[in-house]
Length: 431
Picture: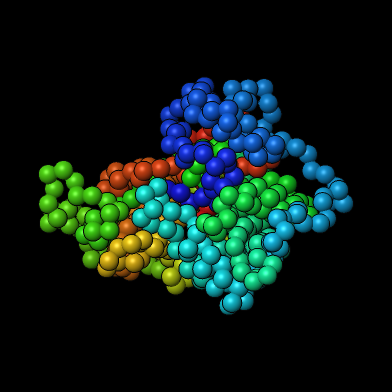
C-alpha cells in the first residue's frame, strides 16, 4: 500500500486518475512535461492552483527564492469564523481523549480511509495509534476537526493538524503536519475536502503558523520529493494467500519460505528495547543524523520521548548499548499500522510494521535493520514496509525488500524549495 494520503483524491476533479509518475531520477524538465501531459485542461487541480504551493508552471524557474511563498498576515486579519459547510453539515472539534469520539473517528477512518488501487486493503489505524499521532507536545485540540450531519450528529469527515518544527536546509520553521483527511464514501461528490483544507489552514493561521507539511498518494501541485514504498515479507504464505504478494516465477512456496527465513534472535551484541533513560542519548543520535538531510524534523527530548519511546501496539524502538562502555551507539524504530483485508474468507487483518527513524554509527545499517526485521517477525508482523528516504536505500535490496506499486509524494504548504529533492535528501517520516 503506497497511498498514505493525508490529502486525497477528493481535492481533484472527480475524473482525475491516480498518477504513477515522478521517478527520483527525473529532471525537473521531464517531471514538468510529464505532469502537464498527464493532466488535461479539464483535470487541472483548480483548488491547488489557488493555494500558496509550488505550481507546475514554475518547476523550471530557478530565479524564484526558496522559503515562504506568501508572508504571514496579522492574526487579526485571519478569518475568525469557520468556513461555510453545505446546509446539512456542521463543524465539530474532536476530543480524542474521549473514548466515544475516538471510537467514532476510528470507525470513520477504518471504513473510509486510504485503500490500495485494487480495493483489497484499507489502512486500519488503531485508537491508541490515533491518540499517539494527534497528541504530540504542544498539540492543539482545535486542529482535530470533524464534520457531522446536523440532524444525527454522525461524523462523516475528518482532518487534523499537529504542530511540528521542520528544518529546511538551515532554517527551522514552525509548521503544521496535516493528516487523516477522510470523507465518508457516500459524500465524495460533495466537494467537502477543499473546504476542510481551508478550515484546518484557518485554524493553523490563528496560532500564527503559516507553513505545513503533508503527503498524498496522488500528484498535486507540486511534490518536494516522491518516494517509493518497499515491502519485506515476514509471513510470505499469508501475504501470498491474501493477494498482497505473488509467488515468484519458478518459485515454490517452500523455496519462498526459505528465502525469507530470519534468525530467531537479533545478532547485534547490546541490542535491546529502548527505555526512558535512553531518551537523551537517542535524541543526540537522531539530531546529529537528521542534520544530513535537506528537510527533517527538529526534535528535542520531549519530542523523542513522545514519538520514539516504545508504546505497545503503536511504536517499537531498539537501541544498541555498547557492552564495553554502555554508550548508545545505534537506534532503530518502526510503527504499527495494520490494514484491513477486504473480502477474504479467513484473514481480516494484515499486520504491517513501517520503518520510522534509524541511526547507525557503529553497527552496519544492514545488520541493524535485519535485527529490526527479526524482532518484528517475533512480534507477529506479516510485512515490514520502508520508504526509500534517508539512507534506507542502502539496505532495501540486500534485506530482500521488493518495490511496491505506488509512490508517496511529500508536499510543503506556503514554502518553496527550488529543486525537487531525491528521496535520500528527505529526513521526514509522516504517519
